[in-house]
Image 1 (cartoon, rainbow, N blue to C red):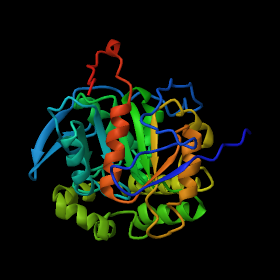
Image 2 (image 1 turned 120 degrees about the vertical axis):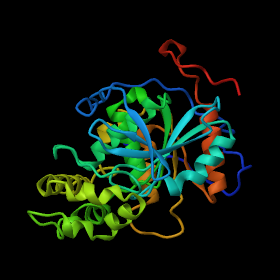
Image 3 (image 1 turned 180 degrees about the vertical axis):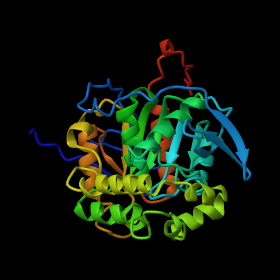
Image 4 (image 1 turned 45 degrees about the horizontal axis):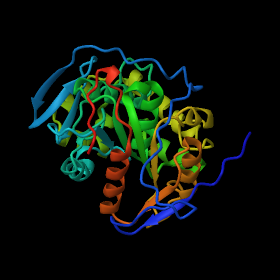
Length: 344
């Protein structure tokens, strides 16, 4: 195996600071890259396209997925001419956390999408037929959402679990992903053990063979019911066997991949994405949890050939860096029937 060259790590304290490389030369844009064929062909199965329906309920806009699950979403700067982006936070968080950043990007001329992933926030409950992990279902939902909004391809901006989902979207549907902005990804055996329990295994204890009653009483699903009252009936109707299968497989996916460069993706899969323009950020310096480490982000930057790891000291600097990166991207190919958004 050819060793990776250690990436540069650049600390930025304010939004006006110029980014420089190892030679001292200002770095003002990301180089255009050509996609390489990857090893992840098994994940690259196109999401079937079909006409989806939007509805309004509980004061929110929802998109109904093919299996009937409703996904809430917001679009900021819908009438802007700039490139589109979809922002996905870490954990099981969603619209509320990323809306401020989306608004700031909209002010810069971009179109920004935020949504709650299925089984999180104000989204509906749905586990399919039990044959896919929760993350696989969320990946498919996200691709369908941006295609429905006519914003594909777009820039995927993801933190932690949102970054993991963004990478898997790029593997599954390369044509939907124009570029990647990834922040504070997780890696290591500790992360695999902690996240599998927090996100999935914890729900197996309250589950009975006959009923979802115990699961409904957990803090996560009680919060979902508060935001979306429909979730109570949906949970009551879930087959406990399907729920168990999905939670077990989803937890196993996280627990057994802690040894990989980042949770859930192999080195070969990440190298296959090195043709996608990418910007890597690490801002977990305020405390060390042993999971969102700088070393993980440096490894990721190497494998994606993304250059320096950026360390923004404030959210304002982060938004400024994302803005500069998105403006540096090469125009989309007009032959694909997608309008150009440049020059700026």
